[in-house]
Length: 360
Image (cartoon, rainbow, N blue to C red; front, side):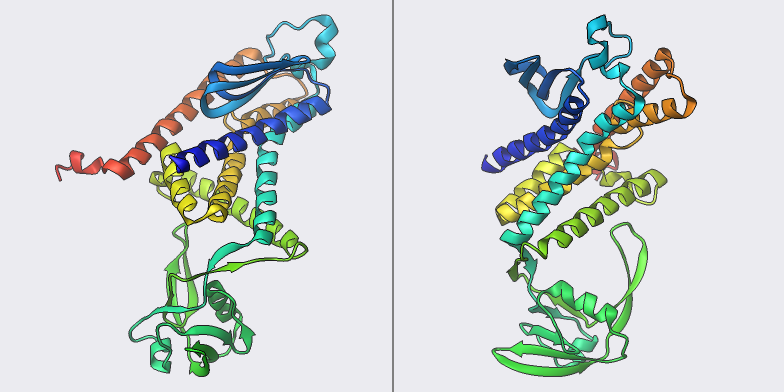
């Protein structure tokens, strides 16, 4: 129950930040905001301040900001035309549409920064299993050893081992370990193996033949060092998300990897059990995903609005209303199909529908 409450609060925050981005930029360009709603459907709570209605609606899976003149065929009084969304220049409309996804990415950046300072869990450099017929075992490294240095370079966490081996050009490396409080040094000749990355692309890397243990250590950064780290993490996870979407469209990655709210809730529950830091980091990733996916050039998404207005800038005239309506309908159908497919994948992971189709 607590995990579900965390999930709803975090989801509401992601939607709030996204819609607040649209809201703020609209206000900056003096566009009249009629409604700011967290959720869709029937309004459970509503509050009117000035010219804007603020609401919490019954369906929490989304939200919206309703702007004056948002629909081109909407009738707008002459005195309000200067504050109508559809009467603003295309570049203004692009900035309003772009603001939602951008605020989601900025939210992730802020989360990464503060979590880097507060501290986050990483696998320690303690050795778990030592593989048979691999260099580490041949050299004498044992389960439980803590790797402290490789060729004199400090090792603070398990991931440092791979990055240090990648930078080392020599055939052999000096590995220093802590074994029950006593330092020991081994000469190890790493072997090269071929693996696949998260996108199924093959790559080679040098390994010692050890696995990480279950031990975790808390890693913290100074407020100064946390700045470049948070920017790097935001860029890297945004890049991975974009590449993942492209590869799904190309067919390189199976569409079965697409997940919906059920998968997100399951993963959020796991992260919540590991600690607040893990949970918050997970929702930073979801925030980036939300921002990137909303930039897809599908009508009804922010990316679709950006595309329409970019075309308008290029052709120097408005796109016919009928063409926009058809595109919006097609976009809505595509979005609904994606949502249905995501829900199917979620429940397929739980119930394994294939056993019913194949008689297993």
